[in-house]
Image 1 (cartoon, rainbow, N blue to C red):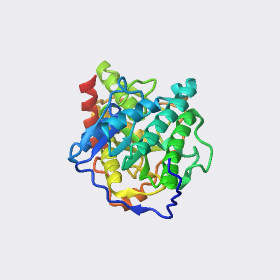
Image 2: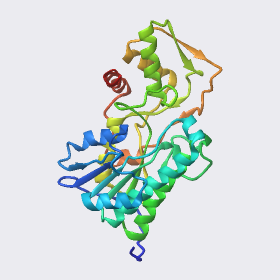
Image 3: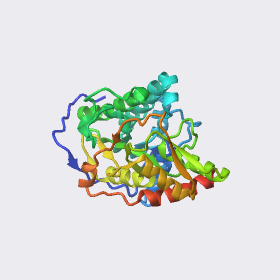
Image 4: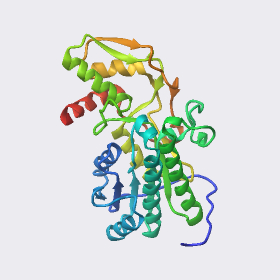
Length: 323
């Protein structure tokens, strides 16, 4: 590896053209990865993908060889081992080790194969559990993490820092982006491991199908959460790849939040469930509010296009199609 040291002193606006480039979406079968593939079709670029059975992203030598053969010029790192609270708590080695290996294999191989630009995707869980709201990028590493997913969060933080290290030491144009809570086509609707929106869609759908007169909402429904359609996220990520180049990671969010009760009402509207909502107050509310600051992204000139109401309607149709 090279030995010179380059220190970036301030963020700078980028101008990176994807037209005519070979662009690898690592993790193309996931919800974010598949949305990126859809979005990149409008960029006049060659989209590269590889199935997980054909390439184990944890194996550095294999990843290096694949990248040397396929010569991507830009890389979106959307690949990760993901799961709910139960999976994180019962398999901490898998979530820490596997995600560390995936990040290291792709980022190091990108350097060795002279990739022009790389965007690493993290998660809002990288931030401290009690971070002030809305959460700004500078909140990273300012307090303890949420214990239920700290293994995944630590691996994602390490990926951010690895991009920053390659950027600082070797001048690589590697950046990181932190999406907020996402929903949309290709989501996980398993009630034991899904996130809020897909779980609500599944519950409302089942209640409608069975003709249940009531549907239970956990807790009071008062906590505030930010939700972003995955196609908006993909559009923002492509925008960031083309316009952002800085040491600091950048938040990818909708910029507004709603209560869980409001979100549940909108889900029921999208599903067509007309029953009564009841509250199970024995269940916890969780963190009162979780909203990321997207001021940095919005200052670059990007804003979301898909409202929560419209996004839930199209997401339910996608749910029905894959059911």
